Amino acid sequence: MSDDGDLEAEVRDLRAEVDALHARITALESALDTDPPPSVEDETASPAVEPDTAAPRADSTPDSGTVPETGETADSEAPPGQRNWERDIGMKWLGGVGGLALVVGVVFFIRLAIEAGYLGPLGRVLTGTAGGLILLAGGRYAAERQGYDRWGRLVAGTGLAIAYFSVYAAYGFDSYRAAIGAPLWVVLLVLTALVAATAVVSVRDHAPAVAGEAFLLGYVTSYVGLDSGSFVVSPAYVVLLTAGLVTIAAVRPWSRLVLGSVLPAYVLHLAWLERLEPPEAVATAVLVATFAVYTAGVYVLRASDRTDRWHRRLVEATTGLNAVFAVLLLEGVVRRLLPTAPDGVAVGAVGLALGGVYAVTEARLGQQNSAAGVLAVVLLAVSVVLAADPFFATAGLFVLLCGALAVGSRRDARAVRLGGHLVAVGTVAKLLAVDATELPAFSLADPLATAMGRPAAYLLGIAVFYALGRRFGSASTTVPSTDRELSVAAPYAWTATGLAVVLLGLELSGAGLSVAWAVLGLAFVGVGLAFDARSRRLQGVVVLGLVTTKVFLYDTQGLDTLARTLSFLVLGGILLVASYAYARWQGEEPLKRLSG
Image (tube, rainbow, N blue to C red; front, side, top):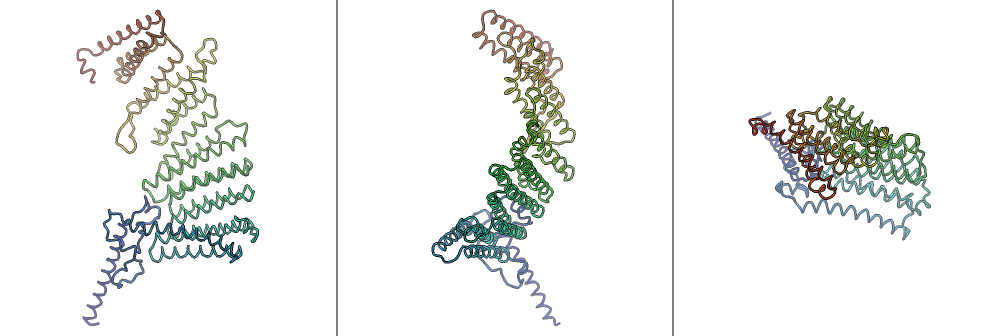
């Protein structure tokens, strides 16, 4: 080859490389001008955002000169921070309204065909189905071959809806059902095949929106199956759909798709339970299977390569919704299935299952499923409250609280510790709202009732909270999303003091209550001074301030002369003693002592 030929070959190679670089730059500029929803990168399982542009394909010829400018690429010169309203209206609104209008037009065409007698019922169904499939294939071709991703998927979704409801008309419309004579199982089989094929194609095309529409229509098909009068068709269909979602999640971690299916799945189960009243054993098996499949789906999503915060939040929300719906439906079914079993059996079983999920996820994946850990502890607490009498329920809550905090601290399980803290809040609420009114008060005439009454419950709570406050010591926790550190021991210690004040208020009244509060405040001040514990001293000062307010505002008006006199004398003496103790404790350098 001559030198001129070599030079021409090198020029052609350089021109091809320049054209390829130009094509890549155009695609990047188009991507910057796209306004995707949150985490669209991960939802499509693609390393780059899929722009709504006619991006060059890998098989485009390098010597084509320049990339052809289309309606979707002509706008790439706009600044990235400036939203192009013309393009949004032209692509999104016009396309969406056009798709809806097309669906409505098909509906009116069917009506017109019925009135004019153009086609028989079977011909109308076949025509609508064929037209929908053509739109589905055309939209997919426009998205995959020509790069019009958003427009193509919009057209594909429109075609899917037209084909679906055309097939549904074979059974859903009385006149069609009478003329065609298609049994329900045939219609369900065709609809299932349509949904399954669309789901497979959407997974291949990285199109979560089309897959979501397909599964939504699948749940509609399950609702149609309720008309069969069988307690097997609809729930089995829902379980199969859920298993299909989990299978897709193993290939494409579309967490939004899994989360969005939880509500329709359990709503369909509820409609099935209310309409057909299936045997309790069958209903329990179906609900347990649905809960287990969604639990497996959460694990699959956790094990995926996606680690962004949006994905984790969606997975946590899926765990919570699955557990809540399963508890609400299972509890009523299990009560009918096992009439002699204590209440809360289903709640406790779901809580134990979530605890296992939390342990397995942490051991196998090295991750902490926070929603599973927190809900496991909370649901176990709810089951204890439902199953036991008020006093034993309170005792069980304290046992669960201590166990959760011990396990959480030993294994560094923050979710379990958080669940324990929530149980502590709920236990305090139960003491104040339930135990204060339902449990018997102190009575020397009935020692057994006193041993399992209100004083015993409150004293148990006071002891446990003081012990936990001492156990945590100077430990602190970080507030999520901030760098603020909060003490763990202080809330427990102050709660114990508050319960002591409330207990005295429930068991005593009048001057006796004033004296008891004053003695309690003096005791806290004394302990705080003796052990140099500032928190105890402050608690004593708060209690003394409370009793002082009571004596001056209430005792002067609501008590007789003798009781009022006793209240003031005791309060005055105790305040003087506390003041003297503070003076002795400060020593020769009071300011230094106080600051220390």
